[in-house]
Image (cartoon, rainbow, N blue to C red; front, side, top):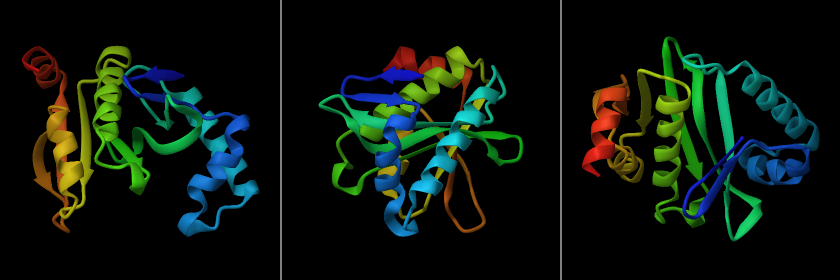
Length: 169
């Protein structure tokens, strides 16, 4: 699977990306090649389970078009993280944050969820101190719904709000 934005390529990883998987997950986990292969297998297996209105787990590596072999982050949709919810996630390398990459990813993930996978609602969240992620979700049209017990924000967007956001942007 590949999704293209103005600057990025979001795609499933393959065995040819194994060294990049190790590099990206090395800190703080001291990732081994064996663990990277297990992660690759997990991602491939869960991708096969994804169906319209039923995403198990979709994890896409983020590549910049200028460096299409170097992973700069991860994003996706997780249907297993919270019972009854599909939650979007993203993480960009620290040195590449605040360049609009996360916003590009979130917009494409929402498009995929609502258009291709026929979802009715998608959730997201961020730590209360993470003002940048808060702003990313707002830019994508997501609405803060509530808070987790620890004070972290819970966001959501339904297909009606998504369609409205597209026409008003």
